[in-house]
Length: 428
Image (cartoon, rainbow, N blue to C red; front, side):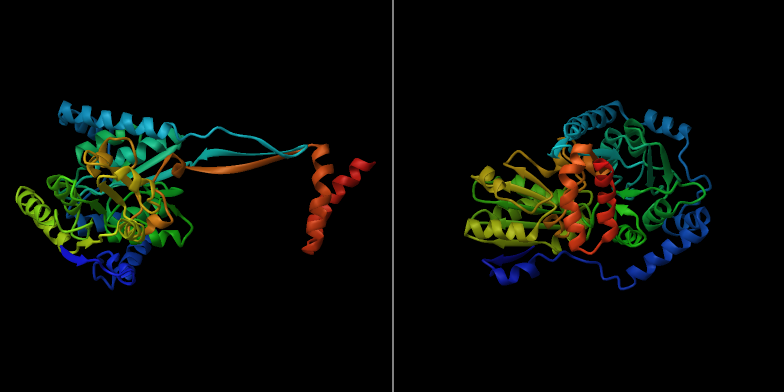
């Protein structure tokens, strides 16, 4: 991790840049995948699965027998853990439901807004070396609470042609309606355009590598909604001399092991604890099965030392981290001043890993600085809000003349007439 001591604000934008894979062909490559799936449907999906996942799949949809086999294969302790996490996620998201509130803006004019579930949603779950069954809970639970009628899930198969058993168990637990053995950009294309097997959805959710992220961005150009711009995972840990060095190191490594293009940032008020953190990272790194991945991620990571607390906070808000851990003596006060972050973890005993799995908050969050404008997934992400208004005769009498005046000023005669014809009727 490269160290920057009291960098000037003019350099913060550069220091906040995330690592990017040097793939000049990324856009054209993903567009090719999208076009082939759009044109050839399931045949293209099978070809890409053989090419990228090295397995031949004939039946893309996961069968009930496979779901039952997956459930039976998991240890009871893991199933209990998944069920506990799902319950907490449901508790947190259930209280986000809004009542329908009607307001009379003018006598006889009543307006309201009602949440309606998005009818068909698609969930993408990475498989690979880290099958993210926790993301199934994070997306499937609010989809179920919202009342989505059709919830499609796509995840890449392993070399034996199966999806990870924990992913299947979690999907069945939260009520996913159809599961398909398709990964990568081709899975996004399938859910966006529909194929012979996979239904077209109205909105796609879920994390992925840069190919998946690019595919989600490109299908937006064709009118499909996505959850948010999201790329490789990241964390920023803000610590002072009161922090436990072993905790800080563990939090940095827990994010670094996600992928080579993940980024971890450490913001300190001085160098007093830095050596201890570095020593802990070295020791803990040796114990990690994903050591090589974490090492490459750490190479893209930085230590920022800012003695002034307000400057440190300003840097955090400029970076806008996906995950922010605050390990300082006044952690709660600092947390209250955070305006740009996906999810915040306050104090020594609030590791980011808890939010990733089971505290109840959602771990599908904006990355790459998008926390400045986007929030993480919530119950409302699976809903759309429709506005309603109803006028009585009294209402049109009160408000009609106002609209007539405004429509005439905008030279929209038909708008004015739509009101005038009603007012004239009431005068008869």
